[in-house]
Length: 111
Image (cartoon, rainbow, N blue to C red):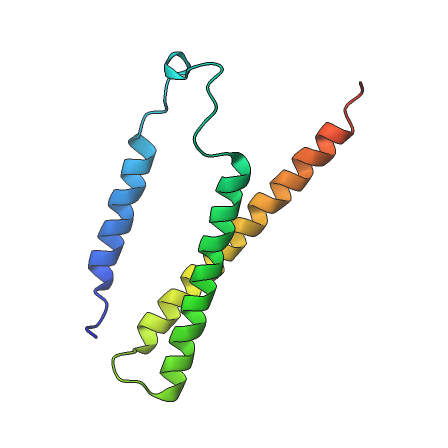
């Protein structure tokens, strides 16, 4: 496997960040009332957890391959995947914390 070009990776990350920042939100007038979205919130959470799980397994597999001495598996690639898995897990944990906080706020609302 070829070495990772960090300059190219940073440029890709910056361009994706700029695209995400400049993407306009869907105006409220375009959202149709009474129409259920094709994907529920529970489905979205399930897919997110599955994606984090996939990143964790991918990192574990790369670590094992590197420890076995498989050719084509470089330390930089392993470290990058481990960091991706760590960041995705931390983000999922923060989302969970916000959901728990929101649930507590709703439960404490006077009726």
